[in-house]
Image: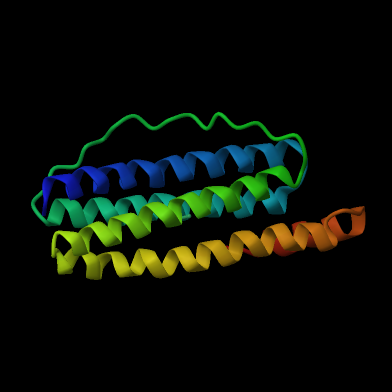
Length: 161
Ligand code: FEO
């Protein structure tokens, strides 16, 4: 694997764990607000992000490259409304999608087709992540602005395993 690609791969691993950290912060925020369904949904999302990081890490190491293990940044964002974390999630996933696309593109630049093939899973996953994140923003706008709607949405989000 090309060394610039290894650097960017390591960066992406770090970003996946940052995503987990961000979603843990959002989970804690909703816990504080008494919305346990939202909190557990974001806890599950944080675990999913750790899984993404581990998947990338495993590929890197199995390709004979060294994993970097840089510091994971603290999420600096604060939330001033119940909708704000959902909007932040959507914006974050848009940024992650751009990173994954760049990584995918980079793999082709270096004619590393095995890595490009591996990254296809992430390209597809990001499509799902974007759909889910924008769906949450939309649902909150439609249902979450009154007590009954918010209660229903919280119950719905609690169903996620
Ligand atoms: Fe690892 Fe939310 O994408």
